[in-house]
Every structure is written in structure tokens, then in C-alpha cells.
Image 1: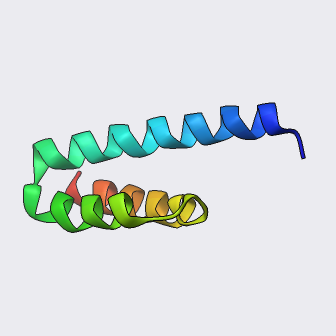
Image 2: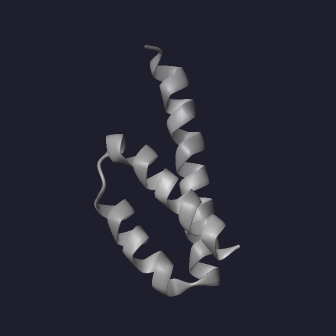
Image 3: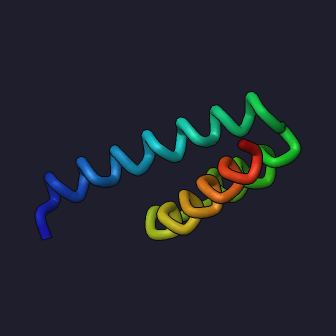
Length: 62
């Protein structure tokens, strides 16, 4: 494992998650709130699964 590349990949994932959270907040706070709470309480290894939920929710709203 390369710690530097892991950090870059994590940063990219967090940027994507934050972008989707922002878009969901602007579109529908009812969808955003539970996902935001889940993300805030998540451990690092849970972020990819939350990202998938965010993508699905975003696609359903568009």
C-alpha cells in the first residue's frame, strides 16, 4: 500500500462526497439530512458505501 496515493484517493472520495451532499442539500433537505448524519457518524472505511448511497439518491432526484 502506498500511503501517499491512499491519501490522494481518500481526498478525491471526500471531495466527491462533499459535492454530492451539497447538491442534495440544495435539491431536497429531506433526502440530505439522514445521509449527512450517517456520513458524520461514519468511520473512514464506511465512506465508499455512503458515497454509493449519495450517488443513488442524487440520480433519483435528477
